[in-house]
Length: 440
Ligand SMILES: C[S@@+](CC[C@H](N)C(=O)[O-])C[C@H]1O[C@@H](n2cnc3c(N)ncnc32)[C@H](O)[C@@H]1O
Image 1 (cartoon, rainbow, N blue to C red):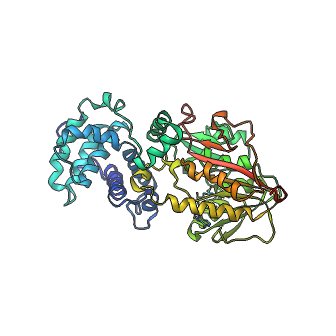
Image 2: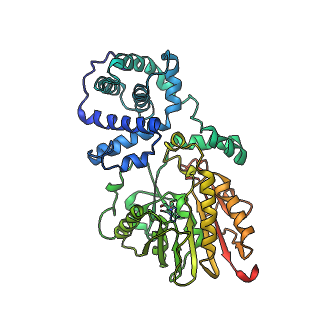
Image 3: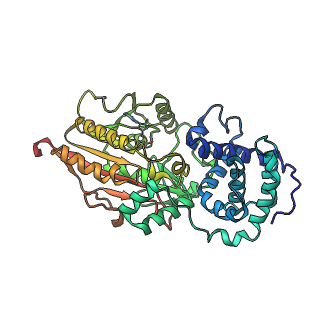
């Protein structure tokens, strides 16, 4: 346990990532800003940092967000009243770093005190930081994992319990606490590369590595023709379900950052990637360049865009609440309140309607969202069938499908509490539909 701290810096190398992680926490929790936006800011908290310090800061912020519930439980008996947010976050971050990341208490507590002292808003409470952390950490290691897992906010928890039941939602909350491993999609099956990466192969073909692996250190990351890209195993399944064939003309309607575009191109399809955001489309361009794959890129509103001729297939990975990605984005429950969901549901329906009109007779459409909410998945698919009598669901059939994933209408419902022994998966909904107008 940490003894009396000297308050001395344990080395600016150790303090800088913690300070940056605190900036991130303050802005996520205080200003309800998404971590991904803050990380991308050219003048943001991580801007001037070296890659390894950046990665450390990011990981610390993620760990603290996943463990806020436990940290607050531990802090409760030692705080007479709730401290100002920056002080509260210094305490939360330090507890998460010691108890969830296994960092030595002495250095972490010293750092926390140094950081508290160095800012006018927190300097007066540096003594409290020191005392509270020392008391909290006393014998906490044994108790930490017994503390209750952080619950989802009510706006999300309630509809998920209605849809899947309480035990399933508790399983999701455990998966959110555990975080996500690193999944890769291979450009093509490659046993030697899989071995060189030291990865496990998952049903469906994605590769899985431990979360702490530094992506830029992996074999094949650099070079003109990378053989893989980062993509959650669940996010790779919609295109596998569509089963694109060489030469098929396929549009990826909400394409950025391009995971599904690359899968389609790697399968030999002639791909048009459409996205509303020019900035995000640059990431598709960069990903295609890195992997040596090709697609036409169109910055356009997919509710308006039309190809020159009807398409063999469309991928619609529609904008959604992203509630299936909380393992990787634990900031989401703190930043969002569910108020944008009805607008997203309406946009998804408009995108679906437009996508159906782009298909040739017999053309296929895969609709998917990384949402856990049935209104952005199963219900959306069923409503599309009602609006378009020529549309029918192609029952999902592939040898990698776990029967537990099947939903009654013929789609797949993936949840973070699935694959608990393998490291979980993102929440996703996906369904393949076929357009045959004579059936209408
Ligand atoms: C879930 S992400 C897509 C992820 C991507 N399919 C992949 O696998 O890498 C949703 C994307 O939809 C885009 N988007 C949102 N509204 C759109 C619209 N009306 N038209 C086209 N793209 C849109 C966003 O810019 C965002 O890049």
